[in-house]
Length: 287
Image 1: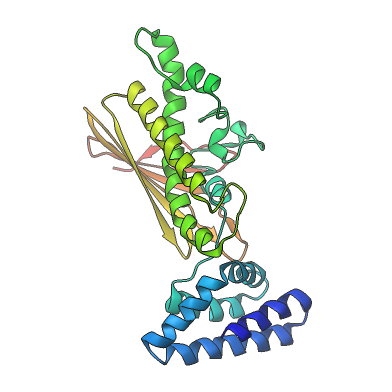
Image 2 (image 1 turned 90 degrees about the horizontal axis):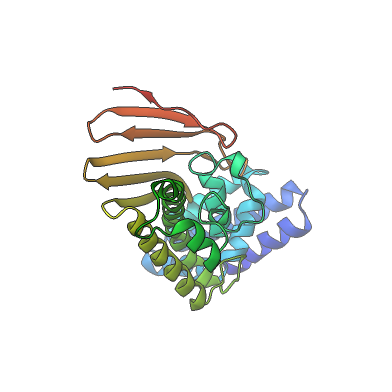
């Protein structure tokens, strides 16, 4: 299998337009996977070992084939998904930014320099002591007007860090196995420590501004990409649940422009909206 994989990688790189050569190499790799899978647990382990050794090469093949040769892509990567639970390595900051557009991030807040995108001024802002103390921290004696200004910033910052955390933890093991260092995704432990520290500090800041509020976030994946985020916000008045969904178009290697949201209020009423990055949607009650 290893030789067949490397041959397909070479064919894609050197013969990008030679459909016959690429198809022949892909067929050899598919047959190799089928032969190993037919051997039972021992053969499946061999497939999993190759996937663990070559995650970057497989992600490169995924990007090269998914749009240009979708049938080959489906034949090969469905086998790998079933045999070895394969999915592509993607930098978490890029997945996060693409996913939250139209959910928590909109065009009038665009900041190309912010990486990850939650470092834009309308969310967490720059990672500096001055910005945090001036915009994200609530203290006793602060005026109602200043609390009103700061609370939306820290809530959005906390929600987006929670979403990023789930995506980061989904991508991090593959990056670690590959030994690769992707932008903002260093494979070393220092990156983990810094991420966890900042998430915990943001949680403390949120609880200082909202002492009787609890927020939980869960990101669900479909075919290797996040497609749903469920956010529960619990206060003394009850629980509000928001479920955002956004489809990833694998052939285009991009998300759909539209993000839908279903909001269930503490009184049981249900509201829906549809938004794009450019145009936030308004909620309409459906029951």
